[in-house]
Image 1 (cartoon, rainbow, N blue to C red):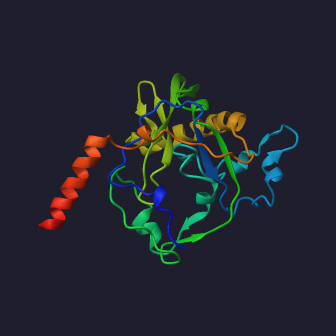
Image 2: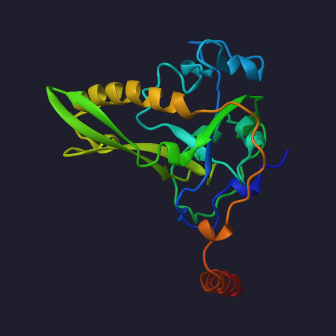
Length: 233
């Protein structure tokens, strides 16, 4: 089982530069001790509300402060089955640059495959959307950013980042106590936002514009020539 090269960072790629327009983000429903995994797709839905069950958005112990998702297109539903394993977590579950050259993980040494269901939503339903937050008798406007945050195992990894007016980004706050309290409040409101827009149906294939994530021709030629020159010396 070869690792899917198409989801790895490589020297010819760049951070995603296009404006979200019907682009979809996808997240696997992973195993948790806090709930039973769905056995079929329909179990993801709450029959009373016809919305996704909140526990499947992410583990109830997860505060949504930095939710991990993947941009759908090149990354497809089958890639959700990748589970870093053994030494793979220490080696590949790390942030990296979009154009880093990565040696592919090795099956069973670094990763295994685990069948999973997933949910998805249009990225623009959350990106730049705002929520109101009351903290210490003050009202704050909080803006969600869906940010490209490549990892060594997944170029298509994106994160929810929360910008709090007057305080900055939640994940960058230095006061851990304040950070934890705000994360809990944002998580509660954020879950409700995601719940309103998340879908659990099968996704049709979607083609991304390559110019959104590939470097320009001249830059690629420069990289190729530099690589060739290095090999000859």
